[in-house]
Length: 130
Image 1: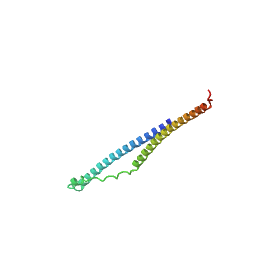
Image 2: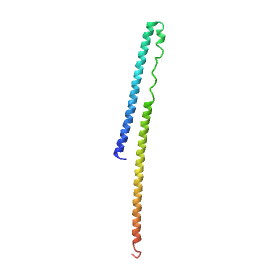
Image 3: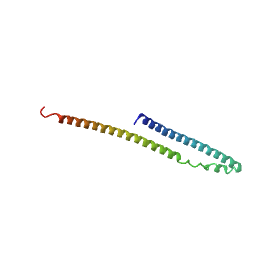
């Protein structure tokens, strides 16, 4: 494959790495937001229950705050597709290199066979009495 093909694979690898990094960063930000939201809900529940009934304050704030549902797996699916595309592109590159090597070997064999045939004709053209 040419240098352009190598550049394409390098660009595809970089895209996969950047996408994975962005997904991790987004997951971290979502987790931080979820923690802050849980903290705010806990504080609100404590403040609300202490105002309404001081006796219920100790038991209600220990209940788990509602959590947001997990984000869809669209990002994971997209990353999986991109990783699959990268693997296919790398396999295509390996196949192309193997094909090019086999073609070179076949071309060398044909050159040798053509040379041998020419040499055999030259030998056949030499008279026996020489």
